Amino acid sequence: MLGGYMGKILYVDLSKGEIREDSPDEKLYRNFIGGYGIGVRIIYEHLRGGVDALGPDNLLGFATGPLTGVPGTFGSRYTVMAKSPLTGTWGDANSGGEFGPYLKFAGYDAVFFSGTSSDPVYLYINNGKPELRSAKHLWGKDTNETEDILKSELGRDVRVACIGPSGEKLSLISCVMNDKGRAAARSGLGAVMGSKKLKAVVVTGNRQVPVSHPDTLKKLSEEYLSKPLGLVAMLIKDQGTPMSIAYVAMTGDSPIRNWGGVGVRDFPNAGAIGGQVLKDSYVEDRYGCWECPLSCGATMREGKKYQFEAGVHRPEYETLAAFGTMCLNEDPESIIKANDICNRYGLDTISAGAAVAFAIECYENGLITDKDTDGLQLSWGDPEAVVALTEKIARREGIGALLADGVKRAAEKIGKGAEEFAIHAGGQELPMHDPRVAPSLAMAYEADATPGRHTQAALGFVEMGAPLPMELEVPLPDKHTTTGKGPIEALFKKGIHVMNCAGVCMFNSYVFPNEAMPKLLAAVTGWELAQNELDVIGERVANLRQAFNVREGIVPKDMRIVGRPVGDPPLDEGPTAGVKVDEDALRKEFFQAMDWDVETGKPSKRKLQELGLDDVAKALWG
Image 1: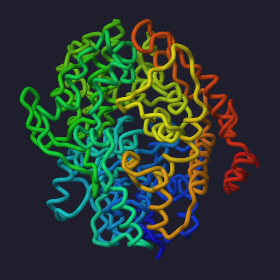
Image 2 (image 1 turned 135 degrees about the horizontal axis):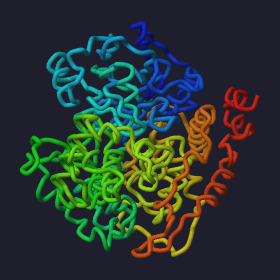
Image 3 (image 1 turned 135 degrees about the vertical axis):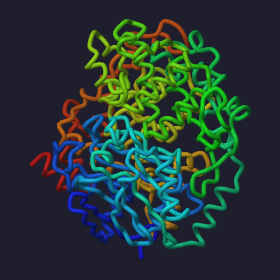
Image 4 (image 1 turned 120 degrees about the vertical axis):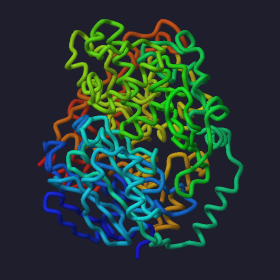
């Protein structure tokens, strides 16, 4: 058997209640590795263009990679994929925890769902035996309740990926949750599950992931993991991703006051919500995803001012910035509460926090009033208002129903110039890293097939020798426009695509050197893949994801960021004062480097054929 793979993929027709099993040709794995690589290959083939993302024809996938479930590799990740109902583009979301490895232990590399069930159901896979079961008793339950009920019925060894009430109510910023706090958060894929009446996927099993050269893998892992951790890795291990929020707020990397403020002026006390404060005053215990050597997660003590039980998850950096710096909120306990609301109801915290900040600014400018908010008064820096509005969004109640589909749609409904305060790329709220600090981020947010994604940009900077924006040594930009062809070209041609396809956490880049990936894959799969071959695979996946969008009629201008995040108008104070990102120059450089048409985004016929995507070339070019 091929190392790293279980060799089986499930296809579930929810309309008919039928399940079939497929054993794909090794070529699929070899050419696309796993994760959203095999996901986009399968979905592109089986999905015609223009389908309703919330209709029965959309195809929803859960996929692992060859390193998922393999110890010593950071192999905890899985990817959820479908056409995004939020952006209309290719949609994917990545999560850690234990669900991904257990899907493989249950016997499968991936599972895809088509159709729509007439009644709520969940898929239960027990050691290679899949079956659909009624989820009527689970419908309406939050994600923690759902997991507890399923474990009480099926045993403590099951792992659960599920949606909460937000996904059931088709919130376009809803997500898929696992392990009571790990989220496949972006692209609105919780709404796709909700539209299909699929409450959960439940897996258990004791099958081992085959490894072609176990002794080699053990030696490699021991070699890499025995070395002293670098500064960033030590801080992540100690404080998790909140480690540097105070610093990056001061350097301009964290967006302030809905992207319109300056940290040193408007939010100088960012340390109040930082990693050290959380560690000293709120953390109860640390935890990690499956077999993780860093264990960057943590659980919290019971709330005092805000009601939440002990054991809820610590907010990540993105969540702290979304509900903190974006809203000028210095109260860490309120952010823990907002995070717990989102986790239980199944909401993307980035989008939810951005929606709260958007609503505050609309209220401040008189575009919405107390009548619209059911009497809730919104103001910057009010933690109680942040929590109350998050609850409304989660429940889709009152003004929460307006905000639950994201800021783009909310602004369209409000009108009166609300678009100025709706910060997004292609309909998806931007992550909490500012292109005015690292201009190449703007093109990553605009040019990736899933717009507005910070993790798609990260490895581009690592590979070019520049630090991630979240690090302590963030470089301040020159006071003029910069482009940066190198990082964004690297982003799409190597690194992050292969890492996501392989099923590993991007934090392995803080422990393993760049040359580790081909060695780890070789030890596990048995393939001797050189780095340049992996680069080609990453480029192949990027081009196929892009071709999906082209077929959907998405063009580059549809993803364009407008306004504050690109310095339009430029800030007049702070580290990024005067910086304006030249999006047109960035786009031209990047698309030319990728051999994609600048106006249409269409990959060239030559490029598609060069990557072995002849069927795609024929479909797009004839």
